[in-house]
Length: 225
Ligand code: SAH
Image (cartoon, rainbow, N blue to C red):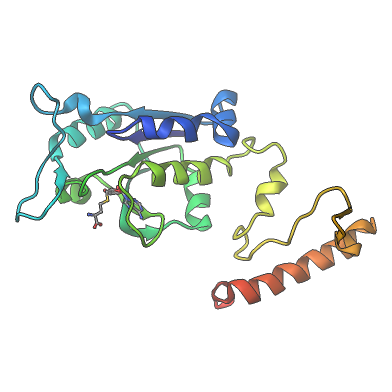
């Protein structure tokens, strides 16, 4: 899979993309992630990428031309399954969307900044808009890093023990069971007895019950449909 991220603050993406599961997946060649700065297509000696908003609203708007040229440079080289604008008014990211994106070949994640991007890019070039939740961040970089992380960890080979991704929260629309590691007792706090019994069937039954119980209590909305 290949992910191209368009950002005027590429520095914000360096650390999240170079460590842990995403960093290792890139090193292993499971995914390619390229960051592009549309400033190279900016206007004038200062390579300006933003301008005042029509209508006089406070805040600068990212101009059409640098984004148009940046996106076109990429789409001329390969076909993209989706050109995704990170936006607080997009569809809210979910495990389902992450699963869907993880099956794609090439995607673009477009990060806005300032007041956002000119609406015409959204209308004519963007194919999908994704939000990371109902709150406003300063730029699309952290949301893009969240999408990249959620997606990359689902690509076969990114996580050494693949069943681990399958037993994560939301993977089957439920929360996951509580987890423990050694020692069996710490500070007087005990690991549930059943996990020490060595009987996989009993353990599975307990985990299944926990999954239902925790989902009912913490996220009853997940059980609605
Ligand atoms: N004026 C916009 C907010 C702009 S915030 C509005 O009211 O909707 C600047 C940029 O940060 C946006 O262009 C977007 O790319 C990104 N961003 C902010 N919050 C986000 C969120 N919850 N999800 C995804 N992207 C977000």
